[in-house]
Amino acid sequence: MAERSETEEVKLLGMWASPFSRRIEIALTLKGVAYEFSEQDITNKSSLLLQLNPVYKMIPVLVHNGKPISESLVILEYIDDTWRNNPILPQDPCERATARFWAKLIDQQICVAAMKVVGKVGEERDAAVEAARDLLMFLEKELVGKDFFGGRSLGFVDIVATLVAFWLMRTEDLLGVKVVPVELFPEIHRWVKNLLGNDVIKKCTPPEDEHLAYIRARMDKLNIKSA
Amino acid sequence: MADEVILLDFWPSMFGMRTRIALEEKNVKFDYREQDLWNKSPILLEMNPVHNKIPVLIHNGKPVCESLIQVEYIDEVWPGVNPLLPSDPYQRAQAKFWGDYIDKKVYASARLTWGAKGEEQEAGKKEFIEILKTLESKLGDKIYFGGETFGYVDIALIGFYSWFEAYEKFGNFSIEAECPKLIAWGKRCAERESVAKSLPDSEKIIKFVPELKKRFGIE
Picture 1 (spheres, chains in turn red, green):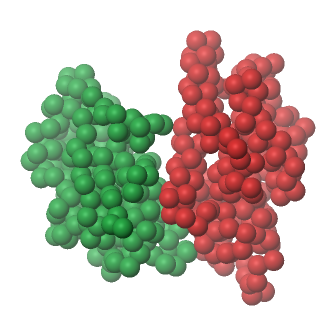
Picture 2 (cartoon, chains in turn orange, purple):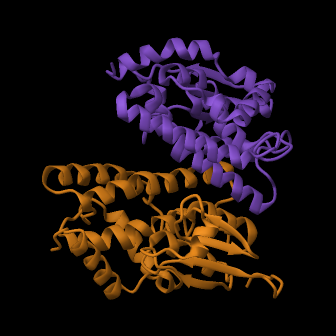
Picture 3 (cartoon, helix red, strand yellow):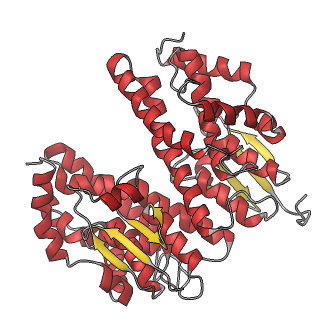
């Protein structure tokens, strides 16, 4: 349990079905940091959210003793810098740089490729699937011989990559398009099983049924055919 | 054992400039290796297999990719001289937020100022100025983005300053008219030895743009 003064105030403006919000909850929970969660309606943004994140107007926003931090990767590093128990990033500078590299790849490229898979049809979708798989193959190779990206225990890349495990891989079931089939990605599938055995991950992942219903509803709204 | 530091780079890259500056700030001797991006070398492909992009920092044989990740790495490996990031976690988070903002926003709109025409170019110019104005208001009346000391956010943005005259020329607009404080900041940074050593002359960039347009097949 982290030792902090009782006047410590940690608030998270988030959204239950957002991978970016959930990863902050994972980090705080891993470190035993008590926080107040404020569920935000992203279709009707609160004045508090707009005030605390004027640049992007997006969740998640972490507010620590009244001071806001935005952008999930920035927030994760802030949490790691502030609460030093159960470190998320490795100590070695080269390993840290590598972890940051994979996190960036996931958020800036894999996430975008995954959105294209959902949003496109026909040949464009096939191309998006190919592109996503090419990127995911790098993650696949990273997992060889490891329980998690972080090694024997959860680390920064694992937390960021939950986007793949619980968003991309749940959506592909609904789409009927296997972006990450087990034949091509046995390591990733093994890693997902390892994640599911972790209590913090289980606690901080949207419940499957509700999550699938939410994704399906969003797909219907965007006129995307579900399987 | 002496450190072996190699930088695979391309002289007009505003991203490569960040890493050059960081190494210079720390007085680290490095072997600068100019890359041909249209005929990529085996070492580039080997050291950055995911993106095949510069800059690539190779420290004692191990590659580090992505320029802001390299800047942070350099700060962590050589902590003694000229710290580039604040030690306070909140200040550090603010610096990383703005570095990330610069990464996400500046290049795309800047590119439209010389790489697009007509309405697309006008929209690009407008967005580019808005982004610069956001950054300028973040700078405020401070000497540098971090306050008294030159650091991470300055390093993230200053490479673009070497391209400003080219954007103005090809986009037919004045950045100084819209963002005078930012231009003043750029001039201040350019006086720093690390920056002066790492930024190419604006004239050289201006001469380079038509060549770049041809390579990209832009009229």
